[in-house]
Length: 321
Image 1: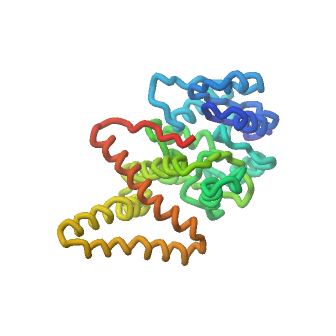
Image 2: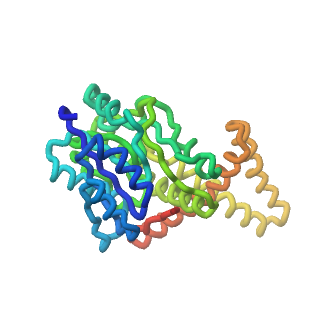
Image 3: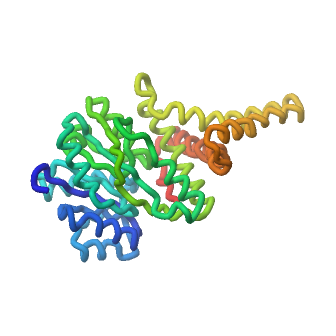
């Protein structure tokens, strides 16, 4: 891969065997690989060095975000390998599927108007829990030109640099936010109909799913605050749904019961009716249930963002593992 040289930026913290799989899938193909370690205490850094990756320690005296880790990794990658044209970002709990590098690199080479290309991210063990299975379904987005990518994607290094990289302060949703700014500069984002990565969510408890969904609500609210104005309207609809179903409607029902009496509790029938609508659309009882419950988690995430914003501070990261 000499023409249009490729580099890799992997990020992680305490990923253990997942990181081993990640680095094994890239180092044999892309020697220019930077691993950014965010305060691991499980030997990840030592393992990465032994495997041949160039390791960068993220400064943990500053608030940690995946966005900041990716920016630091890109900075070091281009410092050590200034001839890199394309960079594959990958999370340390993901394994690159064979053939992806070649296809993604060829796409960017043949399509100079595109800054980002991604593929199908799959969950490694969707059968182990309903939460893993929902992750796998969540990532099955339409192919073709799209609005955004996820954490795993190949990008044109010059395009990412030109818009200032990821937004360091974001605790979630940093990839779609970056894609907004790239598209505003005329760049395009594309998803290939091809396997890209295997992800290991390892979600087996409701509490993990809840935290991940709270993080999603936080991302929706912050994304809407940053880019919610027309014509972008970034994540405005998602934020309104979270606020409506997860906060405003329950509060309205409570106020109505206090003011009008117990009969006002009939307003709560909106929830089973919404569940039925979701079920008729998806055909899955479990998916409909979690979609409905998820609105309360998303609303809590939106509230957490609003409170942090009013206090003038950055919210702490929300981890589910």
